[in-house]
Image (cartoon, rainbow, N blue to C red; front, side):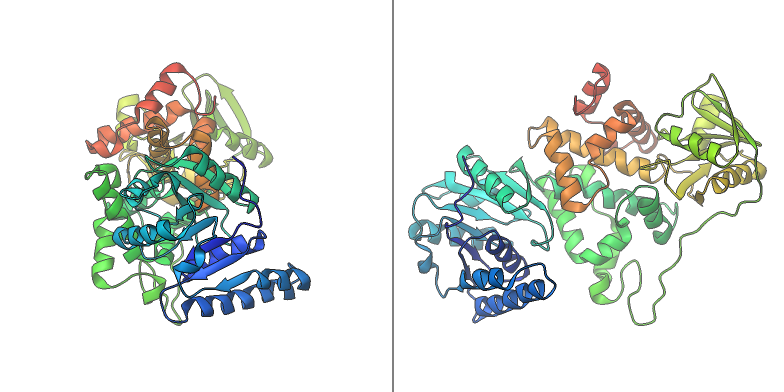
Length: 505
């Protein structure tokens, strides 16, 4: 099925920030747009706001005056749903209440022509449930935009049990015509993004709860080593802890209290205290006038080396060797199990075990573990930890080597999987579950996380880069350390590892 013709009337129900944003997207794509809100004057005010917004684009040269005039001529506020009889697509962007949304759809079904597509911008409610009881449930589909809709590329196209495949495909193709990046998903709690993203917050929260480090340091590691735009603490402060916590609780409840989605007690404390983040002036960080954000903690370097020994293949961390060469450090390579020896230190990338456990099990002295990085050739920060019997000199030697090649070392407590590795492993695991259960494809999972929440790379593509076995090993070690189902590896991850292939093979 093809995209909707540009002459098709697109109606948006709900004139808040999201509804107005969706209206702007459809308008700039060339459609006539009708905007409705049951609040007095809300639609008219939204139209005026859109006129100002589009006017600013024209002032900046991103839209011609004639295009501006054309857009405004196609935008109308309407006073009743009855004026939507000839709409070809209606997108509701109203309160997240299933009864309210269902009532709107029931009204629209009696008003609109049978060929009109009824779409919901819901971020959490079941499309199947929204369509239940309608005369034509097959024309109901999810069209989940991300805020702000004019700027964010992703649109999740959600099919309920009754959604006609042609309807979902039409919405998908229409989103492409609107210069968006759509993905297909089946209607399950959290769809793709709100489900797969849960571990990004959860693992940082758990590390804080276990006193592995402080929020500023953990955020810096996720940004600088992980390549994420923001760390979990600054991001949830921005989103609002009341909102983020509610979504986590909703997903947790929807999956019958599966521990993979267990909410954080630390975040609950913030919500209970009214510390919602930026909007309340305080969350994990303070935002009042004059507030100073804490700096991440960094270990001091005290030495310089001209030689190190690498035993075996460092895997995804192999990029460190090029940096050593650039720093004038001679790299002596010999057989082994992926270790780097410098001074008194024996260094290795984490495999999900605690440093003291790995030192004992592998018979290693002065072991210092370092975390995963998105790009070892460019990262300027890594988390490290060390075994309880590691000497002070070995720790200093490891920190000094990293500093010599332009990497600041931030210490974490001896926690399994450190910060970036365990977070990525859990993101991969949830992405694998989405694919295993037929909710979406591996390609769409990756696209959703890149376009919807700006991940540096999709989690399943990241697993392919690292090697799925490394992710499986990390999860198995995490599960053994904590004794929790939370870290159980996905059957799909096990299958792919067993077959020696990748997610995108």
